[in-house]
Length: 392
Image 1 (tube, helix red, strand yellow):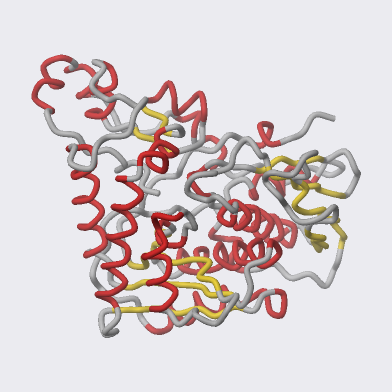
Image 2 (image 1 turned 180 degrees about the vertical axis):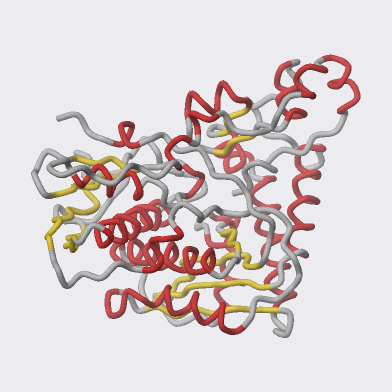
């Protein structure tokens, strides 16, 4: 989902006259919203290394930046990861596939951080049964992780990219990624070995299919924008201006002066979906299409199955791919709209599966992303470790 460029509205002249102070202000995020991106001090002797490890895990990518991670540290030497069922996306992610992938990104960064401290993270997925968002009573236990000191554990070079990794939704340079960089990304994604039956692929400028990739992305993005219940799901997690961003430190952050000015004078109504021909919709479509055209390569991941364990492990593979891309100076931007399983997206969903050869029953495109070189972007807000800890 687009974040800082989510809203594009016309009529700025009126707003400029009404709120000149806002228009002149900075679009930088408030410091407290991105404080979690400051590297923690090394764990002191006798301190709880789990907190140091988790300070890295909470920087993993998450769909809509919802950060649905709850952690229980009551058992010494263990980390129990729960999925916060108040942070789901029932309209755009009705089966919680993306949420499960986001649980996986957390577990993989946790594993990288544990290795850095000489621990092996023995992870048991769904020890009380697979996640069901509608189960009563609730069972949100995703994984139980036991940290085991192990002198044979080697640090993973991908760890060095944890604080550098940011999802970049801007227009990319059309310079194509070189073959060595693509191989590094593919190798990283495949690093889970037998834990995941995974196939990865790329489509660059020399690939005749790249025009089809762009067309599917454009179609899927417009569908999400003109479907009221799906665009409203994003509106519900919009954080506009420094006060909202600092208070929530999650979701889709917008701090651009123009949008803040519109909100300040009541011209940005988040209580209803804009119409398909409204400037808020047509502006976003135009902006997104420009970015799609400024995309030199696409990356995708296909799994042979789509059960909960596969989804979690696909998330682990994706963050490894994004960290490897970061190490190569490349940016990634997930294009999840066409992978979402609500009825209006059935056409793009079938099209992208057909395009990348995922048509055998059970095969699922778990990730599809833009890939290319781009100027660096800032970090997304994070809630900080304390917000994720379950009370003792």
